[in-house]
Length: 370
Image 1 (tube, rainbow, N blue to C red):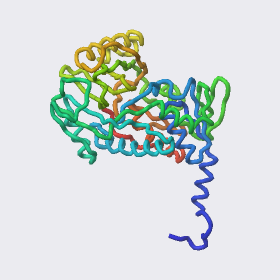
Image 2 (cartoon, rainbow, N blue to C red):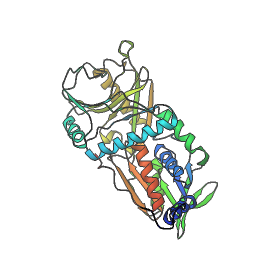
Image 3 (cartoon, rainbow, N blue to C red):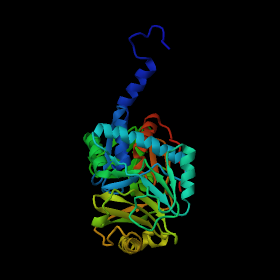
Image 4 (cartoon, helix red, strand yellow):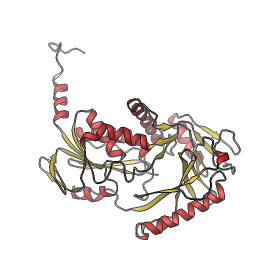
């Protein structure tokens, strides 16, 4: 609807919003995939942003060369959110001029697979329910699962390409400095590092294991418990080099894994162990040893397409018990997101954090933890 006397002029409200966007100073703490996605979204919206990282971008929880993308979830809302994230990944691909997701498909099998199928049906997502021996399954084992759900939109996120794209977008505003303290004041937040201190209008915490301590300085408390996690990479036997699907499965004895081709001829497997075996007090070395023994024993007994010798391993810390789903917390000008398995939703999480940082809001939870 035209506003009388406004021809050739921007509406006053739009001018104010534009000015606020340009003038607003926002700090993003952490340059993992969520921090970089948030920074990129803020830059697109004209914010004056600085992204603080203590080591190297995407060097800790976002490290490695690959992750699994999937629409498949046990929560219909998360299925829908993953579809939105896939659309945003496609936008990134257009800007990067290369594919960021190798769409080989993702398979969910084992006890409870029907729950994933039901959630995908409720969300209107394309999927296939298949039984044992289906020719549609391309998995590293001849021990065909009793029930499986194929998510044809799933695949392998090429992390190195995502990293290169996001760093290229955000490089001018990335500051390699460790944030040591946040001082919330009447007119913003003072971000203190070992070498500087700057005032910002808002802060977004995406600092992985360091988020809880910084959030506590701002008066709120995201989950702080930590545990150890590792995934291990093996070689695919030469005669089994076909393009296999990503795979989330639980064996008959309750041993849960996620698996995918991390590089040509390589197969990565992460296992979900008894929490007591990977608890923080166990120590990283012992937890890694236990994880490697259990995962390799599974590979040896079940994956006939994979040679059971570890050629690489990837370690990270996790917040135990969160699973899928993203939660947000805010106190005043400081905002944080937390959850696990966030990489596949990273473009959407970054967008929501950017919008919330700029309009001083709190995003709604994205699904429920499982």
